[in-house]
Amino acid sequence: MSDTRSLANLTALRDGSVLRRVRHLGSAHSGLREWRLQRLTALALIPLGVYFAGSMLRLATSGRITAAQRMKAEAKFHELVETKILELMNLNDRVLRKAGQVLRIPSTSEVSTQSHAPPRAG
Image 1 (tube, rainbow, N blue to C red):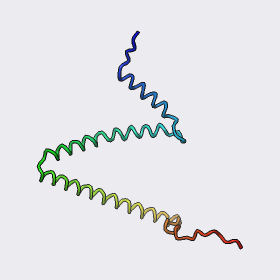
Image 2 (image 1 turned 30 degrees about the vertical axis):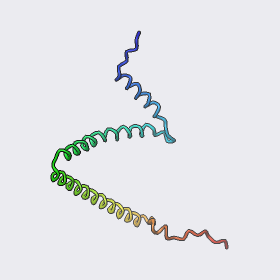
Image 3 (image 1 turned 135 degrees about the horizontal axis):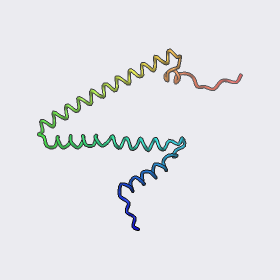
Image 4 (image 1 turned 30 degrees about the horizontal axis):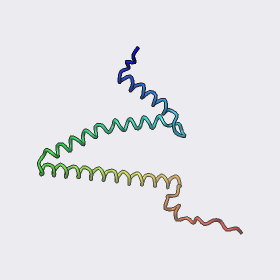
């Protein structure tokens, strides 16, 4: 009797054996979580790649002025996103400082200015 396994069945068998092998990897046995995260990020990159290829094709087929205008609009968008991210980071820093003051936790600058000299024997 010949072995007539389909390609889909072979792929499913391979993925199943890989999954079984991955389940208990790592010191915290977190291999499965890492494996799933890698698969999820790979899937998330597919639409990004399609968008990038489409953008490059549109820029290549458009005229110089249109391409320059699109690139300028993209630069403005990225500048806006970067500004918003920096504002959120600043807000987060202020919230953490305030929480540290309320909980009386010294900030990193206060800790670094304290003397780290060993106590004197007396």
